[in-house]
Amino acid sequence: MSSPVARNPQPPRSIATPCVKVCIVDGASGLCLGCWRTLSEIGGWSGLSDDERAAIMAELPARAARARA
Image (tube, rainbow, N blue to C red):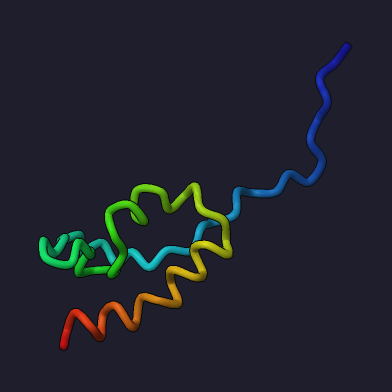
């Protein structure tokens, strides 16, 4: 028996990320100063759902503003 051949295989979908490849974690806030995520968020990013990632990304501008104030 021959193995099934995938028809029109879909390439892997890219995962949206706010990473700007500037990885410096602020000790006081625990946030990366490049993307404003926590180490936990960065580490678990690929395992989060699209909705979970979108919710975090929506918070990032406010985190950046608080850190800069």
